[in-house]
Amino acid sequence: MQERYEALTHIAPQVSSLPDPVVSLNAMNLPWDSFDVNQEPMTQMQVGVSQMFPFPGKLSLREDVAVFEADAALHSVAEMRLNLDMTVSLTWWEIYFLDRSLETVIKNKSLIRQFIKIARTKYEVGNGLQQDVLLAQLELSKLLDREIQLKSMRENRVIRLNVLMDQLPDLPMQLPTVMPPFSGTVASESNLYERARLARPLLMQEKAVINASESRLALAEKEYYPDFMVGMAYGKRDEDTFGRSRKDFLSVMLSINIPLYAGSKQSEAVKQRARELAKNRYSLVDARNMVMSSISSSVTDYEQAKEQLDLYGNGILPQARQTVESMLVGYQVNEVDFLNLVGSQITLLNYELLYWKAFTEINQSAARIRAAVGEENIYE
Image 1 (cartoon, rainbow, N blue to C red):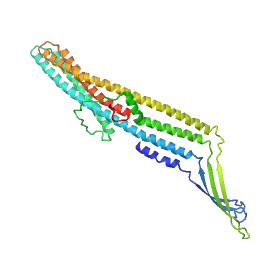
Image 2 (cartoon, rainbow, N blue to C red; image 1 turned 180 degrees about the vertical axis):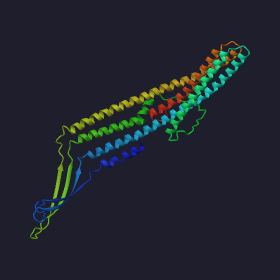
Image 3 (cartoon, one colour; image 1 turned 60 degrees about the vertical axis):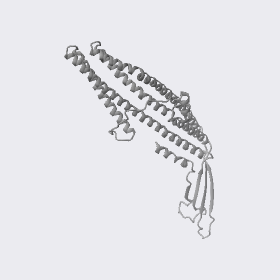
Image 4 (tube, rainbow, N blue to C red; image 1 turned 60 degrees about the horizontal axis):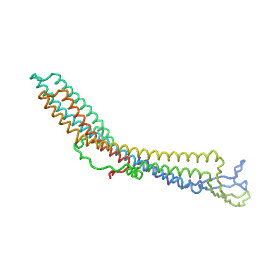
């Protein structure tokens, strides 16, 4: 896309230049019967040059169109960079979430193995049921299956991230195990809207497209006016049959094109360009609505994930861990049913995964907000 922009920057000098002059070599009034250049007095060998001059304003409008199209391409490069940066960030955080999920599953596998050991010991001494051992083994098998799935998902995300980073797909990737806790307050939506209006490359691209369409419309209206062809020719005549010299000729020409079919040509072109301009203006409105919608949705997701992270980290998870510990002690003294113990462990596992999902969603939402606004700093 960068090379496409670079290519478009070379169009403006081309379209703003005059058409190439035309050099002509002519044999004028050459007698058909003999092709003798001395036979007829009006026979001459002529060399001429002519130049087309578009109606004033046409060349500058063509240059404007090319410049605005190049500007739009430049903004599209910046937009692509934003989207690429966002995609890399989202994929990175997906891998981070899968790493933490794997850690959580492995930790819960150890817990389930502890359950199996306790259940088997109770069964062997006659204080437990065989079904408790079988149930614990089943839960362990489920965790092993989930671990396999998570590893496969991680491998797929690593392949995707390597491709985005222009690296070999099978290149191993090791992410940090601990990320700093999130801090900061995202700016208000109205503030983010205003920042996006000034900074989002997509909106600037649409504005550049509108400017190009306005220049095309003005150029179509200019096509009602004729272009001019100015030419000059020098005609050389040879001596006559009696050896007498003949005067050479100098010819000057001026021609213009007549918009004779303006009703079906120029008028229709103006209507076409006007419709294209209206379409591009609607496209800008649509793009603005899309940007604001993206900002609002991402801010909503951000705030939800932030509240959930606080709830899981400071409320639900400590309670779930205490519940599992309490039930494990109760099960050992035959005061808690094994099914309830396993259920509490499953609940703990699910909330630990939700905690890391919320942690990841905060950072992914922040990445989406940055891409939607077009700025790195999205905080107050």
